[in-house]
Image (cartoon, rainbow, N blue to C red; front, side):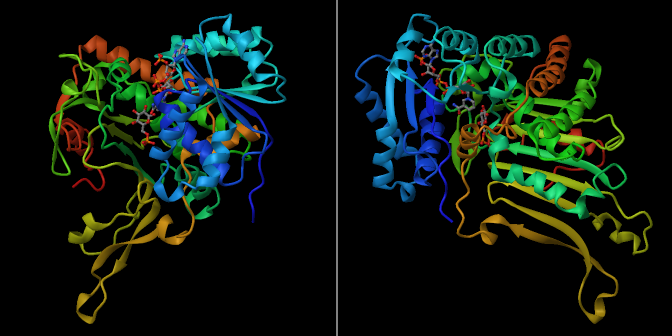
Length: 489
Ligand SMILES: NC(=O)C1=CN([C@@H]2O[C@H](COP(=O)(O)OP(=O)(O)OC[C@H]3O[C@@H](n4cnc5c(N)ncnc54)[C@H](OP(=O)(O)O)[C@@H]3O)[C@@H](O)[C@H]2O)C=CC1
Ligand SMILES: O=C1O[C@H](COP(=O)(O)O)[C@@H](O)[C@H](O)[C@H]1O
């Protein structure tokens, strides 16, 4: 079936020559165009500080497109059609006089999307400028993460935006929500009664969420050193994954039904007192090491690095959700840079059967696990117990996976990048995959108490060699409970 284009719009991309725009947003928009999803009169205006001829900047965008779109997906016709939609305007987003010029450049616009691919500190000024120039009324705003640095600053950003844009036209990005496999969590949980009846503390012993990155800081030291892995990854992506796993069934698929359930989970997250931090949270910072046989620098030797920093590049923690469904079920979260491989997965560990009838020595083998692999090699595997075959095997048990690999099952389908889906949903006006203000704020509140606890305890990150799974204390964190991280080699 041919794709139908969505309603035409004008997309104003603030920060249009920045890293995110060049690496992710333009390639995603190109893919939407290639798939026939952009209406003929949809226009894209890149906005940036750099002066000079618009044609020069558009050529730069074109070069980056060819670099970041996989070679097999660069179609000359589609590329030319896409580049013809583009224009560029130089402006300082903090300069109020620049917005009437922007309004002139845009001319009459029926529907506008203003995408803020800039630091959050300028979101308020952009909103004010758009409103003063009469550009706010028919506009949806898209806010990149992180929104603020803590609860107070995120409130300030949200309020500055809300002064001109209502919540139903505010789209807060968490790109993990646009990943195909993350969306599949909703299908897996709520389209299969098989799982939902087991999805609670009666049947699940613990849950692991790992988001390991192989990359380091990639030229973003200045930003990252102010943030750290807790703010960069846990406050948003990992807590969103936790919410999708732990939330109660929403009554329907509407944005607010799902968001209401996610907020309940965030509110139920047990605070971790400063004196419990040593037992429940581990911070790490990578030193030089080896990944895939190549020596890589430590965090303090990366481009633009300072000689000292207490910023963490790794966090592992044990979280608890205080409600009926999850009481007594630990959620172990772990994320870090420069780990042995890129891997995002969720592992649901089910409890042992209530009455055990097999040979005692086989007992440690017994375990049903649901492994949800988010990236790469997306798929789902359910570890089940069966009997070894053969006359001489008696009732000898073995554990085997029931596998669903998405790449094998849907061979022909290309997995779209998260930003393609998210941009398309903004164009359609669908907020399901975007984060509501209160979700962001409850997530900050929980993270803020960890950061305050670290400060109070004078906590410093533990070193780990690049190419390993983090400080050994992160292994102790889970082995103390008689468990281990699934799949670590
Ligand atoms: N890059 C990534 O992979 C990711 C980025 N994000 C978020 O996306 C946003 C953008 O990040 P990223 O692209 O990496 O950052 P960059 O610094 O590469 O891009 C931001 C762009 O905004 C421009 N800009 C900032 N202030 C002004 C201003 N007052 N007037 C005109 N232009 C301005 C910058 O210009 P100049 O350089 O001249 O200051 C720069 O071109 C941030 O909120 C970031 O946290 C989120 C997830 C991943
Ligand atoms: O938001 C961010 O995400 C990336 C990881 O995203 P992924 O899609 O590659 O898993 C992370 O590297 C970056 O530091 C962070 O800001």
